[in-house]
Image (cartoon, rainbow, N blue to C red):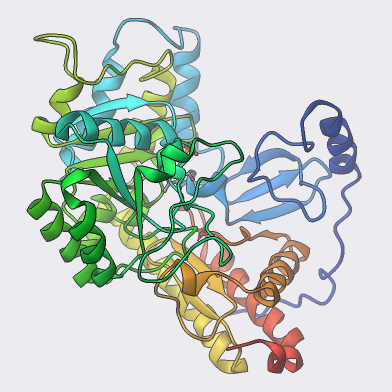
Length: 453
Ligand SMILES: Cc1ncc(COP(=O)(O)O)c(C=O)c1O
């Protein structure tokens, strides 16, 4: 491997045009941007275009993109097969009130590929997919209460948001986590209708269900929650969810909006979870807005209006729009078992490389993730749940330093979330990630005494 000399590239990037756009943004947007998730260091980087694994910002800087629009772009930017298919469609009409053949193509692909999906409905975002999965579980069971994992991100539906941003000040005791709403003015009743469990905590799950199991419509679970630490599920925890859910008549809802990219058949299949309903999004839209809720036929019948008014009416002006359907089908068709093997190898290569750098400098860091996802924690021990993954103030500043170091080397590393690889990345790109991290550890070797283990 050719070792890159970073000494000349470690510099503050010049971004006058980003500065100019941010000034304009501050006039029209509440904080200058349109999404809370836009990263700023100290201001956002405005993008002119994407080229495969790279972004070119409005100032002409070229950046290796490990965000890929929050793990959406599994083929990177400007993927030609999708671009061609969409260009062909644009002049034929982009949305209709009638169904089109295009929705069948993506639906058939997903139904054949993802074991948990027998029937499917399309929506426009992961938030909507999770929302409709929860509503479907309620409509099927006649119960309104749900359980979910502390710290996991499931989008912006009120009940799905409970305790997603829990902090030591609010999260309550370990053996009975508190349910906290996520925005000022949220109805207190929302939190009252959500039970919070800790990831990988079987006893906690049993304790919760012993109290409210009979009232629960579903357990909402992302098999490897990114914001909660990108931590691998303990197989015994996955098994306990399945067994206890059946025992209490609770549906299991897998949120695979992010983690469908874990394997050819998705994350549940990879980790042994057998969900009744599954929410998907991100990669299945090929770079266009999308969401989907799928599941067992019997449960999905709640959406059907064939015999009477459906138990759960679901529409959506742009649901199943041809652009997202075609882009999604083309992107997903290109993701063959061989593509997933390659993504797996790439992920292993990067995680092993990062791990070797940590060992070389005896640095207080650890790496989690699987398949094409990884996350670097400034902690010696790999966390097992959100509380363990939660960074102290000192650890937060290490994450900020690390992100900023990568940024100076023209690599976009997401802050406190999953970094992801794409099929378009080369071995040289992967080596760049590992070298940038090694360079960071080398630079800070003498400071490590100060990081808590
Ligand atoms: C696991 C998970 N669920 C749901 C969502 C919400 O998806 P969207 O942003 O498309 O609404 C996300 C988004 O990052 C997610 O990661």
